[in-house]
Length: 501
Ligand SMILES: Cc1ncc(COP(=O)(O)O)c(C=O)c1O
Image 1 (tube, rainbow, N blue to C red):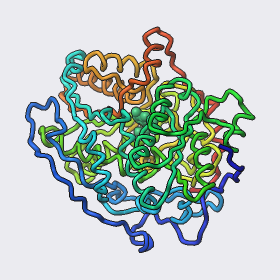
Image 2 (spheres, protein in one colour):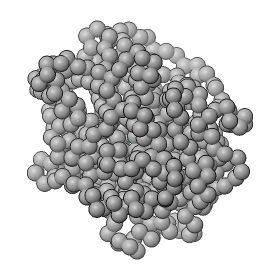
Image 3 (spheres, protein in one colour):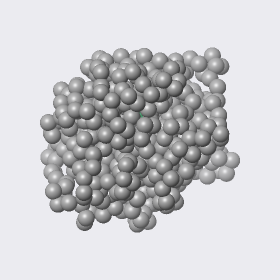
Image 4 (cartoon, rainbow, N blue to C red):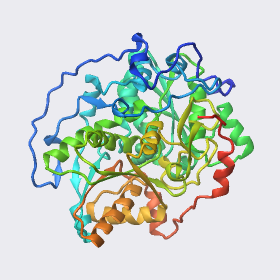
């Protein structure tokens, strides 16, 4: 497919009213959310005292997503237009997203009803199990009780379909025929391809070159579900061509792949863009995980002391933790909430909190977030889904407000943890959640030292059946730690827009 060149800001429109991400009362009436109450049958529920596994039959699929923005005492800063640097308005986003998702992006409603059609499809794999990792506890000889919420049971093998399905559904409702996207590890791309195949939309995906080469079976999954997949950077877009001119062997990055997909979405009115993380509406959809899990923990009479999740753009972490942060804000519980990022791409722990672009070419709105700089290209670590220069603005804000912590772990320790997990719990994790496993093991071993009987809840966001090449490298002793280079980030940070914020 040949695309005509577009200017770097062409993908975001411009108009006169303002995008009020910080106050529902200012949001134009025409953008009020529809509150359609789903009418789906509830499976029978019971409470399990054994606490080993809270299975699908013991919990209902939530009928609402939870919007943490509604409960935050200080509201997050609004996104800015990439050209004018003024707060954006809803119409600016309409070349890229359907209206209903734009409304969700700015909503201050505490709960948003999940459409019946989406709940119906969620029912293919939801509720997902909450499992006690007794065998891992035994191996570690820890008094801690470790639970994991497992999202790898979805058809695509991760949490990503929780947002892919509603995103495609809302696009379909507004007459869109095709969606385009980026993907890192291929998890998001395959989730979107799966959702498009159910609803009959066309799907085109730019997959980060490093992962395209490392994970051919993810590409084949996307193709099996009918998607058209390109390695990124590609010659198809102006953004891709520019990168290839500068570096013909570029491993790509999520920022570059986003630029390519956004560029293509901006060209056709019947084509929109879908994002697999970072934005408020994506985090919102993922809260189905935490909504389910709060009920599951209650059913077994457990309260988490520590909640741990890996973090790339932030969607699985937000999905599990935000409903628990709600309970924390209400003073009902007080868990430590910990995000784990790769040492090679540590946006929360080593980045700056500033307005920056979501993509490499600077086409997206500017978002206040923790960033390593929009043209930072992380080393090609195996957790492709965590190679993103920025962080969800909502998570960045929650982090700044002190409601959560973050840590960075190098990939060898993560794979060591993954092997322990696979050999005790049976599940071979995707490289991304190995970061959560490594941090969970650290915490459990701390409990062993101190004798504390903490309850650790971990987000196990996907399986690694298509990531076995990474395991092969680890098992052959060839997997190395790619350390974070300070000079590289300083060079990249020097290029973020200089805004007094
Ligand atoms: C299995 C898995 N976990 C985690 C991530 C990171 O994304 P997020 O931080 O949005 O959950 C990805 C991204 O592709 C993924 O595929």
